[in-house]
Image (cartoon, rainbow, N blue to C red; front, side, top):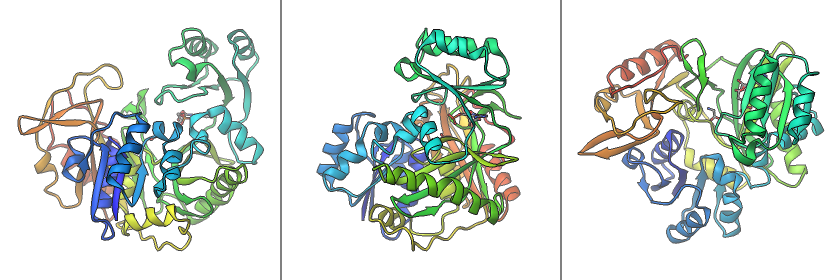
Length: 418
Ligand code: AMP
Ligand code: GLY
């Protein structure tokens, strides 16, 4: 097979890297990819968001399978465009991607389908009504912008003032444009978070191993939210009983409900869960792999990933023989100083080769480019140092030993992943 990965971050590097290792795959393209991904895939230039350009590209190279990494092209309907032109695609239709694209849609969908989630306090598209409603809502409260805001559209707060301020930023100052035109207030849930991702063919599914992200920028979950500072996955982090409960109460009703509503979900369904005392509840859905969860998950895959994607695209994932080993993996994200606020780029990166001397370590590139025969930084999240091991402790030790060999000006990473 020839495989096309769409996207250009660390998640897509992990997807391309695993496809390259798949016996069933003879060639991997990545569009647009990045200079780091170019070590493992042929990168093809295309403007992110240019779905017509990606379709034209696919028509030229004719991949046997395409997998779409990020949410934006999915929400824009790239999967529909590719399928309509005869391509095998892993990535949901625009209609199914509303599970991520609209938090109001997702919340009402969960209510209709009896999927456990935090209670809705109200949905408003009018600032005055929203502000009034806040005064009567129990605290703490979660305020969410309806549309995608690159991870910045959610506030959990015990302060009425803070909630009001955030609502004004969304609705009056329109900091996120139309995405913040409608807001949702919901119950704040307590517990441990878990990213539970499955690969679905529209009817059946294959669970990925569970993973846990670390969203805040500093150790001990301090500081602002980011795209994700690191992730781990380990055998036993979810008991068999809990996994069954998640599948039966959340995942299957979600896939069944969305299919029944006319939009079968083909691709990676990510349920962001809170493990509460009353069982798992959905915080959000994503219509794709997580980043950096994907990096930790592929590190534990012991099967032909190309075949798995093909099985999903062809509606026969049910009997796919997945095998997972080794028992644990850890991905530590190295960021530019200042991220998620303003940061500088173009900083020379050293130590990449030394970091990968340990055969169980792979460094995925989120945002790098080549300059003068080496790599320099090109974004906020720069690299995902990923290690596999027989247990979490050894995987983490390897990831941190490797991260310690890498250097660039201003480099920051959390020391407490896993
Ligand atoms: P989301 O974009 O919906 O995943 O929200 C981002 C983060 O906000 C989640 O990973 C949680 O940490 C937090 N969050 C979202 N919804 C809730 C909720 N109902 N209760 C508590 N925390 C939440
Ligand atoms: N790491 C969280 C996400 O990909 O949404």
